[in-house]
Image 1: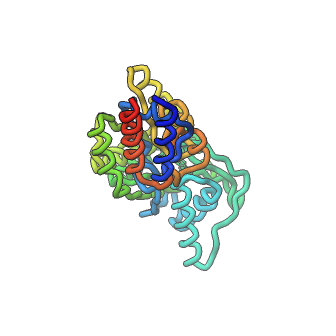
Image 2: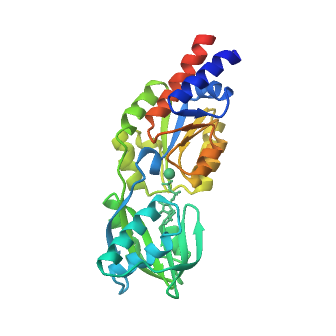
Image 3: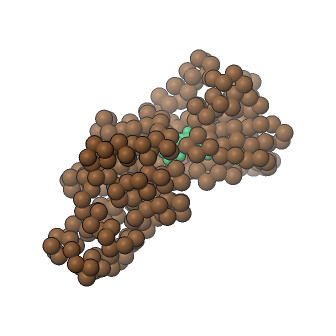
Length: 301
Ligand code: ADP
Ligand code: MG
């Protein structure tokens, strides 16, 4: 491969809204055979909406939403944005506002916590909330509530107040229209698509089925550090791995992958860890990156 041809390729890429860290990246793009896709914000719009609030242990739905919204207002996660918006709307229609939070803490891929109106409030996945409740575990009845929410295909977020479970907030995301055609195209180009997500298995399986990823290629409930482990596992099995993501939690896996691709709509941390950033928010541009590298290197070989 001559530098001149590669430079022409990167020039063409930038016209397509594809930013490439260096000409050599095109070479790596040509050889990938596996494409690992983050779910939220990559395959789906990451534009979640709260669909229901189930209060538990004597709490009130609006209060659960307001307390959770207060803590989530300090988080960048798409789940946080949805809960904050819903909390502000609920508060506004009741003529009040979402309270302030102090001592905010965030556990990547787990949840958030802080002090709201002198109550300790936490919101997050069940394994995280287990660490926030006094008993150190969710009760069988609580687990059942969770199973019911997840069976409906929702992303279910637990809220705890002062060491006790206070409710579940259910959220729904939408799949980007461009995702299914792009995934068909990856397969056609010989790239095996894999879905990797911190979200629950029901949601992940539904999304995978809708976009044409086979059930055996779905890895759900994966913590950020385990996303990297999954990439390493695939590499050790001899695969050349591209990883596509948008979140802070995806950055280590983007750096580990043979080719890291960030969605331009995502976080700065993801873009900094990536070899390629696609300016829009469509996987179609990731397809174009692969096609472009093959064309560029095909021509100049
Ligand atoms: P994804 O892989 O879908 O982008 P993450 O790894 O960021 O997801 O998060 C995994 C899970 O951790 C989420 O599905 C959610 O249950 C929980 N979580 C992460 N951040 C938050 C937050 N700010 N508020 C509530 N829950 C969170
Ligand atoms: Mg994401």
